[in-house]
Image 1: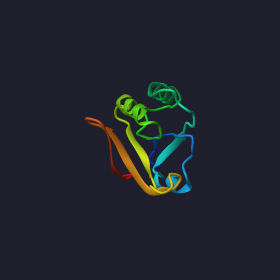
Image 2: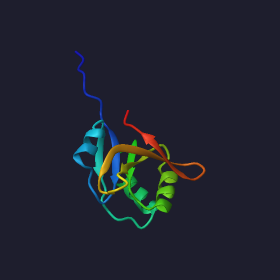
Image 3: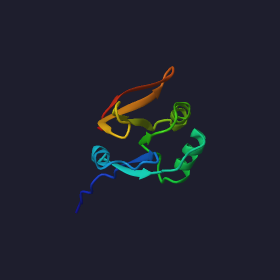
Image 4: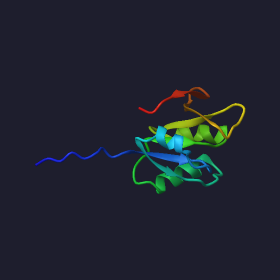
Length: 116
């Protein structure tokens, strides 16, 4: 007798002092979100913490940190997709409902991203 199990959710690490809003949680409903609200002194410190405190390599990382650290973090993250919440221009506390994929080639850049 076979039994269907729901697929295991992929891991999303959330590196921000601010927790995800209810709308952000809904947007990333297909992921298991684990927040790390620490202040990081370097990208290496952040990535090592993620590696040492998760049971699997994250599929996704929502990262809010300074640009120079973000560039280093992306280079260390390897196959992990790094995204950033697109905040309202007039109020940086207001999420627009959109995500940006962060990439480094040849320099730090952003492009629109949607959950699969």
